[in-house]
Length: 94
Image (cartoon, rainbow, N blue to C red; front, side, top):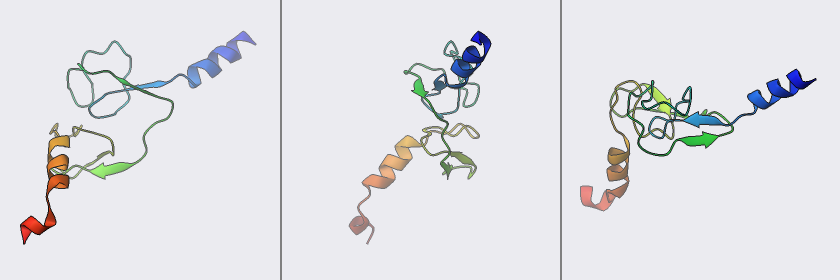
């Protein structure tokens, strides 16, 4: 019976995600994300469930996780451009 409890605990352990591309990390000891290749200097993200929502990268067009700040494919930072786009006042474009 102890073996079944160990398996259940392993299944429900929180996932550790990269704070930049939000992909799942193999372990918390990773100094560099194997997906986006960024050195991890910020706190990793702990969650009980995987991200399912996707968006398209503004640069390469490939699908990435909705929360991602960096594209895991082209390695370009997205958060500064997205913030700049939100700050644009449509009245200034006229």
